[in-house]
Amino acid sequence: MSVMSIEKIVEQALQDGYLTPAMEAEVGRICDNASELSIEEYMALDRLMGALLTGEVVAVPRKQFINVMEELVLTEAIARVAEIEATSESSLDVGDIAAYALNRLPPLYATTEEGANYQSLRAKAELQELISQQVSEAIRRNLDQPTLDNRTPVLAKNTGNEVLRQVSTLLQVYAPSFEQK
Image (cartoon, rainbow, N blue to C red; front, side, top):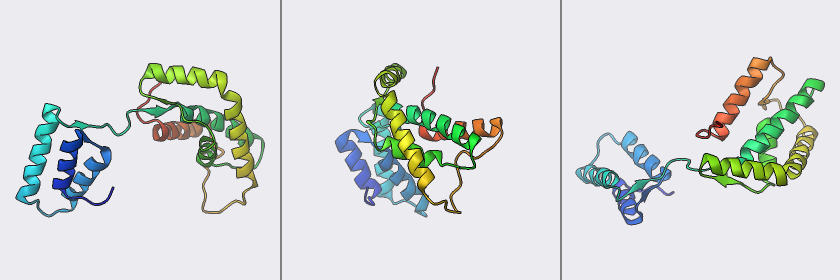
Protein backbone atom coordinates (compact mmCIF):
# COMPACT_ATOMS: atom_id res chain seq x y z
CA MET A 1 0.00 0.00 0.00
CA SER A 2 1.45 3.37 -0.98
CA VAL A 3 1.73 6.12 1.62
CA MET A 4 -1.68 7.77 2.03
CA SER A 5 -3.04 10.53 4.19
CA ILE A 6 -5.50 9.80 6.99
CA GLU A 7 -8.19 11.60 5.00
CA LYS A 8 -7.56 9.43 1.90
CA ILE A 9 -7.58 6.24 3.98
CA VAL A 10 -10.86 7.20 5.66
CA GLU A 11 -12.35 8.15 2.29
CA GLN A 12 -11.30 4.74 0.88
CA ALA A 13 -12.68 2.89 3.92
CA LEU A 14 -16.02 4.69 3.64
CA GLN A 15 -16.17 3.95 -0.09
CA ASP A 16 -15.30 0.24 0.32
CA GLY A 17 -17.07 -0.33 3.63
CA TYR A 18 -13.92 -2.01 4.97
CA LEU A 19 -10.88 -0.96 6.95
CA THR A 20 -8.08 -3.40 6.08
CA PRO A 21 -5.20 -4.24 8.44
CA ALA A 22 -2.84 -2.33 6.08
CA MET A 23 -5.06 0.77 6.23
CA GLU A 24 -5.28 0.52 10.01
CA ALA A 25 -1.49 0.15 10.28
CA GLU A 26 -0.94 3.19 8.04
CA VAL A 27 -3.29 5.35 10.16
CA GLY A 28 -1.39 4.17 13.25
CA ARG A 29 1.96 4.94 11.64
CA ILE A 30 0.83 8.46 10.67
CA CYS A 31 -0.51 9.13 14.17
CA ASP A 32 2.69 7.79 15.80
CA ASN A 33 4.97 9.91 13.60
CA ALA A 34 3.01 13.17 13.65
CA SER A 35 3.86 15.67 16.38
CA GLU A 36 0.28 16.85 16.08
CA LEU A 37 -2.64 16.09 13.78
CA SER A 38 -4.43 18.73 11.72
CA ILE A 39 -8.09 19.54 12.32
CA GLU A 40 -8.89 17.74 9.04
CA GLU A 41 -7.12 14.61 10.27
CA TYR A 42 -9.00 14.72 13.58
CA MET A 43 -12.29 15.15 11.70
CA ALA A 44 -11.45 12.23 9.39
CA LEU A 45 -10.58 10.00 12.37
CA ASP A 46 -13.81 11.04 14.08
CA ARG A 47 -15.77 10.16 10.93
CA LEU A 48 -14.00 6.77 10.75
CA MET A 49 -14.77 6.03 14.42
CA GLY A 50 -18.43 6.88 13.84
CA ALA A 51 -18.56 4.66 10.74
CA LEU A 52 -16.93 1.79 12.64
CA LEU A 53 -19.41 2.16 15.51
CA THR A 54 -22.45 2.16 13.21
CA GLY A 55 -21.11 -0.73 11.12
CA GLU A 56 -20.95 1.44 7.98
CA VAL A 57 -17.27 0.42 7.90
CA VAL A 58 -16.13 -3.01 9.06
CA ALA A 59 -12.60 -3.56 10.36
CA VAL A 60 -11.19 -6.70 8.74
CA PRO A 61 -9.39 -8.80 11.37
CA ARG A 62 -5.69 -9.33 10.77
CA LYS A 63 -6.12 -13.04 10.18
CA GLN A 64 -9.64 -14.36 9.77
CA PHE A 65 -8.62 -17.62 8.12
CA ILE A 66 -5.90 -20.20 8.50
CA ASN A 67 -4.05 -22.35 6.04
CA VAL A 68 -4.45 -25.85 7.50
CA MET A 69 -1.64 -27.04 5.21
CA GLU A 70 0.82 -24.96 7.27
CA GLU A 71 0.05 -26.95 10.40
CA LEU A 72 0.23 -30.30 8.59
CA VAL A 73 3.56 -29.47 6.92
CA LEU A 74 5.00 -28.04 10.13
CA THR A 75 4.01 -31.16 12.09
CA GLU A 76 5.62 -33.42 9.46
CA ALA A 77 8.75 -31.25 9.19
CA ILE A 78 9.26 -31.07 12.96
CA ALA A 79 8.92 -34.84 13.35
CA ARG A 80 11.33 -35.59 10.51
CA VAL A 81 13.87 -32.96 11.58
CA ALA A 82 13.82 -34.23 15.18
CA GLU A 83 14.47 -37.79 13.88
CA ILE A 84 17.39 -36.68 11.70
CA GLU A 85 18.94 -34.46 14.36
CA ALA A 86 18.67 -37.20 16.99
CA THR A 87 20.63 -39.66 14.83
CA SER A 88 23.18 -37.42 13.10
CA GLU A 89 25.29 -34.31 13.45
CA SER A 90 23.09 -32.44 10.98
CA SER A 91 21.11 -29.44 12.06
CA LEU A 92 18.21 -28.36 9.89
CA ASP A 93 16.10 -25.22 9.63
CA VAL A 94 12.44 -26.20 10.14
CA GLY A 95 11.26 -22.84 8.80
CA ASP A 96 13.17 -23.27 5.53
CA ILE A 97 11.94 -26.83 5.15
CA ALA A 98 8.31 -25.92 5.84
CA ALA A 99 8.44 -22.94 3.46
CA TYR A 100 9.95 -25.04 0.65
CA ALA A 101 7.27 -27.73 1.05
CA LEU A 102 4.41 -25.22 1.42
CA ASN A 103 5.42 -23.52 -1.83
CA ARG A 104 4.88 -26.85 -3.60
CA LEU A 105 1.60 -27.87 -1.95
CA PRO A 106 -1.95 -26.59 -2.37
CA PRO A 107 -3.17 -24.23 0.37
CA LEU A 108 -6.11 -25.44 2.47
CA TYR A 109 -7.82 -22.40 3.95
CA ALA A 110 -10.51 -22.51 6.62
CA THR A 111 -12.36 -19.80 8.53
CA THR A 112 -13.87 -21.91 11.32
CA GLU A 113 -12.66 -24.69 13.56
CA GLU A 114 -15.11 -27.08 11.86
CA GLY A 115 -13.75 -26.08 8.45
CA ALA A 116 -10.19 -26.52 9.67
CA ASN A 117 -10.98 -29.98 11.04
CA TYR A 118 -12.63 -30.95 7.75
CA GLN A 119 -9.67 -29.68 5.70
CA SER A 120 -7.22 -31.42 8.02
CA LEU A 121 -8.99 -34.81 7.77
CA ARG A 122 -9.32 -34.44 4.01
CA ALA A 123 -5.64 -33.57 3.62
CA LYS A 124 -4.51 -36.46 5.82
CA ALA A 125 -6.59 -38.85 3.70
CA GLU A 126 -5.76 -37.43 0.26
CA LEU A 127 -2.50 -35.49 0.52
CA GLN A 128 -0.38 -37.07 3.28
CA GLU A 129 1.87 -38.86 0.78
CA LEU A 130 2.41 -35.64 -1.18
CA ILE A 131 3.13 -33.72 2.04
CA SER A 132 5.70 -36.35 3.05
CA GLN A 133 7.33 -36.25 -0.40
CA GLN A 134 7.64 -32.46 -0.36
CA VAL A 135 9.03 -32.39 3.19
CA SER A 136 11.55 -35.12 2.21
CA GLU A 137 12.63 -33.12 -0.83
CA ALA A 138 12.94 -29.97 1.31
CA ILE A 139 15.09 -31.85 3.86
CA ARG A 140 17.26 -33.32 1.09
CA ARG A 141 17.85 -29.84 -0.35
CA ASN A 142 18.48 -28.37 3.11
CA LEU A 143 21.07 -31.08 3.86
CA ASP A 144 22.78 -30.48 0.50
CA GLN A 145 23.26 -26.75 1.21
CA PRO A 146 26.61 -25.70 2.61
CA THR A 147 26.14 -24.61 6.21
CA LEU A 148 26.28 -20.85 6.67
CA ASP A 149 27.62 -19.67 10.01
CA ASN A 150 25.00 -16.97 10.49
CA ARG A 151 22.08 -19.43 10.21
CA THR A 152 20.75 -20.81 13.42
CA PRO A 153 18.65 -23.94 13.35
CA VAL A 154 15.08 -23.42 14.47
CA LEU A 155 15.24 -26.80 16.22
CA ALA A 156 18.66 -27.39 17.71
CA LYS A 157 19.66 -30.47 19.68
CA ASN A 158 18.12 -29.65 23.03
CA THR A 159 16.26 -31.04 25.95
CA GLY A 160 12.64 -32.07 25.47
CA ASN A 161 11.42 -28.90 27.21
CA GLU A 162 13.48 -26.67 24.92
CA VAL A 163 12.14 -28.43 21.81
CA LEU A 164 8.59 -28.06 23.16
CA ARG A 165 9.16 -24.35 23.75
CA GLN A 166 10.49 -23.92 20.20
CA VAL A 167 7.57 -25.87 18.71
CA SER A 168 5.15 -23.74 20.71
CA THR A 169 6.84 -20.57 19.41
CA LEU A 170 6.68 -21.86 15.82
CA LEU A 171 2.99 -22.68 16.15
CA GLN A 172 2.25 -19.23 17.57
CA VAL A 173 3.98 -17.69 14.55
CA TYR A 174 2.26 -19.94 11.98
CA ALA A 175 -1.21 -20.08 13.55
CA PRO A 176 -1.64 -17.23 16.05
CA SER A 177 -5.40 -17.40 16.34
CA PHE A 178 -6.01 -21.09 15.73
CA GLU A 179 -6.42 -23.37 18.71
CA GLN A 180 -7.02 -27.11 18.46
CA LYS A 181 -9.73 -28.12 20.91
